[in-house]
Length: 514
Image (cartoon, rainbow, N blue to C red; front, side, top):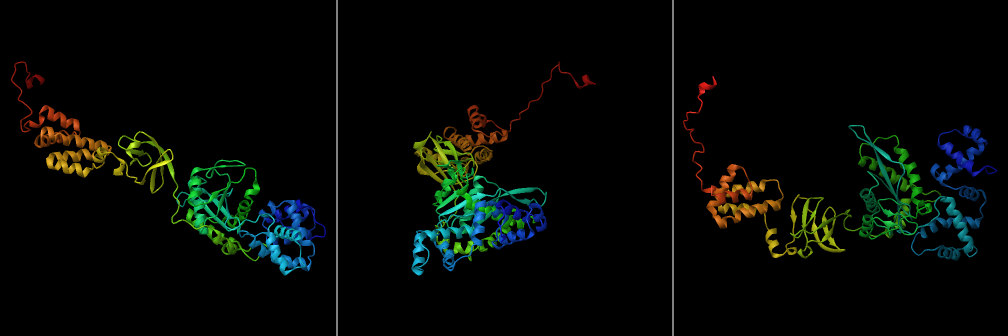
């Protein structure tokens, strides 16, 4: 190191210029310092494997402390104590372990060693030296920090050449700093929840709490004291039995660990991919996963262990187990229970039954890919498997009064069979009504009305009426009723419908037009 330290501002400038490809000679000339000094500072940063992003994030005080801690000669007693620090660093991440407890272990082996106050001081100095940006020690399995990178990664449409910029999700476990990265379509609720869930399955466990930035997909209203969490994200967290602890506004230290991870990901993932072209999201995520594995298995600076080894050793077993199946994102809609004891879900154009005593009430419909739940005043009235058949009915018989149970049993097959007992023409006519593209309930009511006319007119007359209506190509209840009322079903169809024109002296002959 140079005999006299230069300003920390210049130290940052040295490495920034060097990382940008500026030669040492030019840096020396530009900053007005010797080439020897430039070389020594660059060698120092390289020895500690510091990236330009990490150096930029460090304060001048942190840089000053880092250099001072390396310049002073260390006593044998201090070197002995420091040899325990990597072990202490791991142990402090376990629940219930404190610095005082570790000092007691150390002091039993070295009675002439440092006292507790000095122990705390030197451990703090070592922590700053090996990890100048992050000073917190998080408990294993406690928190997962979530964020999106500011920069995006592109994919190119293979056929049109259109470029689509993808968001990049990053999350970090607080204790081991084991990192997960994924490219996704957007920062919207569904994409965000999908990424967080993929992280859970990547870690094969669930942390005690999630710490998102104040993203709209996670937080409805930000607050320094008690943020309002998005309902869907809160439901997702409840499903996985974890808490949501949004970072406080204007408190960057709350999310320092994930912001530091983002900076490192820029260097270890974004930079290696900058000259590659990807044509779809899966191939991009596959490349990210490969680089992410290298990043997680790279040893920490100043330590012999990596994020991956630390995760496997102390954090994996501290995570809560995963549920049997993944979470399904839920949506909601409002509706009114109709007089037929069903509520209409406009998303699918489908009807679901509700107990008949709730007819006329306004209800809340909560639905996901597999289920539809219907609520009134926070009370669940009904739950059905989701059916996306348009204008179909999903009915639980117990939900309906006796008359409606009869109506619920209507079906096309039932009406066709009924009409077949009356006559072939009647059966053909009923099929024509059912083939009309109208609401099923409307078709069923028309069929029911026509078939009930047999009680008044008899099967033969009704069949003849249907035969005549088929000739008119008019398919509705009113036409059959009119035919029967006017007796048109009794007319002989073989009678000639035209008559000869009578002779008349006023009728002009063909010669008139010549």
